[in-house]
Amino acid sequence: MRKFALVLTACAVLLCADVVHAQQVDVALGAGILLSTTNLTASQAYLPPAEKGGIYPSFGIDRILPSRFGYGAEVAFSYRQQSYDGFQEYRPIFYNGNVIFAPHFTKRIDADFMAGVGGERVLFYSPSGFCFFPSGCGTALNSNHFLFDLGADIRYSLWRHFFVRPEARFYHIVNNVEFHSDNVLRVGASIGYRFGPK
Image (cartoon, rainbow, N blue to C red):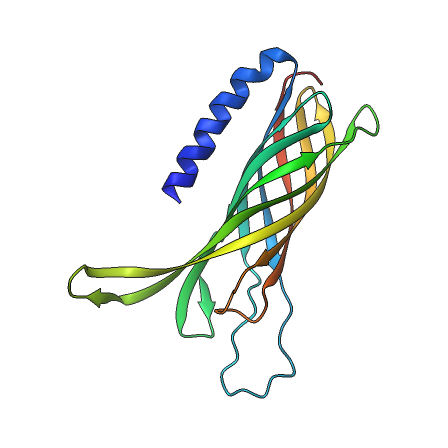
């Protein structure tokens, strides 16, 4: 997570430096919720829970070229620890990089359609810690998964370079064995600022 935050910060600095070339850079903060299906037909005694619920703050940065194509990066994480089948706390973190197509509709309305790859890190917490004698004790175990994502949003310019953006992100998480489904949907909204031409 720290490495991704450093990469995201470095990208933000580089992208903002490129604004002088009449390109658009959007920086946004948002929040959303996670949705997924629940398994109602399984006959197992142990059912993996659905990966859903909770508030997911997010941060993203996009660079849109004059051709209306671009690229971006985003991270979203669960605001609070969630309960895994009532006996263990966990926190999912999603991060991804995307290619973007950003059509312009009206003076105030634009859209973003994106596709990309990234990862999910699930931190499982234990109040008593996990002890492995050669490496010591820790309070969290990580589960990492590769993911594909698709997304869409509508950007509405509020005032000057500020915008609001309702958005949806679909994640296909490869081999998401800890949860019921490999597919989750995050829906929410962001508020942001556009560097470059309006």
